[in-house]
Length: 500
Ligand code: AHR
Image (cartoon, rainbow, N blue to C red; front, side, top):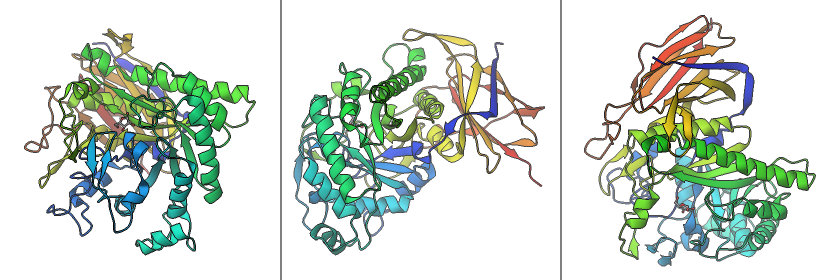
């Protein structure tokens, strides 16, 4: 049986893992907010209409940052509609839905506090501009004594929200965006908006929109042109990527190859602008939307327009999707030196790890588990992992290593975590992982997500159909960890120091 050989050494680090890599995304889209995180009258709802069952799952998932309120939605959004006692019902042009505005800024801030995560707010640079963005940050972050900050206090928030992380619009390059712009139009607007927002609160961090997709025909010239205008006034450039099974399953399971190439190209573009400007600053990335999304199915769906909280993009995920998501998490950790923020899109119902029924239960989709493992255990430094693995053939990428892995090392606790995927459709692959400096470690956690039916899914009726099980047979001896990876599987192993 062909074996994979992996080597890690705590002295060979890629970079510090920013906890904000384990972010999520809540958009006013379909049933992410309404019937997702918020459903007054639901048996599990609190006095503010927040579903406690969903809150529990969000905490269990371990999300650290949540991007809000969009997405495409934000490009036509008036934030004032979602604060105060009068909430106008409006048309949401992005998703051709009716938005009641029952849930808005204060409700989101109350929800995120309960999750224990940090907010990442997006301003509307589609139909709006500098003034509305400056107003929003004054409303959120200015202590008091001005009309906007006093209105926040009147609306129930005596203390400023202190929102640090802000997105300057969303996917402004996309023809689907309400208020699409050219790179130079957007770059100027983003730079001026950044200037005004920083005048209100100099402590904020700002994300400029990069290309909405690697497939966009203006990628990466858009990114370079936007950075020419914004390099000195923003902290991050955004990138978004979604994958789906289109042709052979092997190519889908290997699609992290595409994600890795995309991240590399965005880094190269940032560094090109850095060089051209002779800048001392290195631009970091915000991968603020990523996931599996069956977009072709979405495009083919017949949809009734102008409904409240319609069932939109409620992809049902299987084990195959969970293994793909695991491989994207591995790729994220491989780029921990340049990616500071990442948002798994989205949190509930819409391409989401958590699903709900109106008035009914909430449950975990299989993609929940790899995310929860990495958010829980990937602490400290992301380590370089040298991988020698049997190859698998793919139509899209040629031969690709079937096994891929990421590892982390926490200097404070001495804990090493290893995350592995086996993307092969048939073969169980034995792995030998050599751990340099592995004195006094023991296996403290070993779980495997696998199923004989790789298309198995969870549902309201069978919410535990796909769950991780205990890993068996891992042996750690003389700095070598030996274990077996079943076909199409996700494995997490944690090694803890025996301390006396
Ligand atoms: O996450 C769904 C949508 O995908 C977002 O609204 C948009 O930003 C992206 O195109």
